[in-house]
Image (cartoon, rainbow over all chains, first blue to last red; front, side):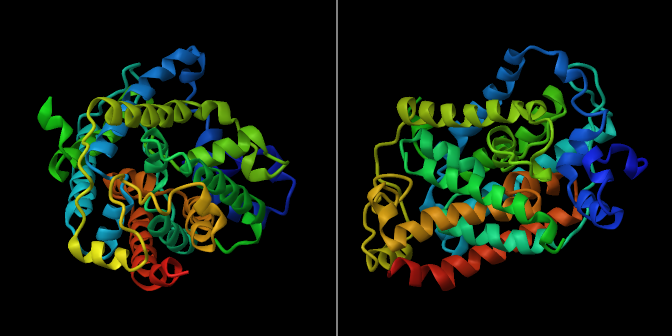
Length: 183
Length: 186
């Protein structure tokens, strides 16, 4: 990544640089959105081009349900070490992902539009510990991480919509207090 | 067709999930991560002038299409590949849950907890509303969830993602083993 100041949002530049820099540096998502290299060509595509991501989502949703990954009971078994199932799923998923990423990097594989595939380094901050623990608590309570929440609605557990609304409220609250939280 | 209706083993599901990572990268340089959608929802609906929600969320609209697909995939799975048998749960868990009045295993979620009436009980409110809040707050604070950190981040050998994943697990173990027994008995 090149000079930090160049892709810092304009409104950040008006705040004391020390604070703004510290916060902006922990926010890889916005930074990546503000860089000119990412998503640039995608903008010219019509909206229906996004349906290819829905197709991937459909496959994902079917696997989620059929392998019972969205089950509250399976998550409890995982955290109580009463079943190997979830460890097997996550472990093989990570291994497959690792192998795929290594192959993409080694053979310099391009996207279907011929663009180079970009990876962005994550930087360590306290949020990964504090936020990680908070998410872990929520994960074991609801028996679902964010992806499975959407699949749970699909199987007819409509009350899960309330969990999603609550998660959006949680995200909003984080955004509101972000600058006062340790990072 | 019949074999697809039975629960799929981990060694089938895991690799397919792992392949989502290269599929999204190759289809358009997209990084597999789901919890970001909660942020995009805030940015789209109630940014309220908060700096964290001021960005071009429209560039991330692909992710709404992706989670829409997950929901549709789940509908397809229950309508076309449904397994009518109750979910098989470890007998130890079954016995423990029975003590808290949870003995309905007909759905993937415990029906006695996951219903609208339950929201008005202390136990249901804590588990669903507070649980959801912790998911939303925690994932953004950590910068990702199981998909963004544990699958995408670990696939790219990112150390912060390993830290995050370990903390997810510590939080989960603490809740399931130490705190949930108290919440379930409310």
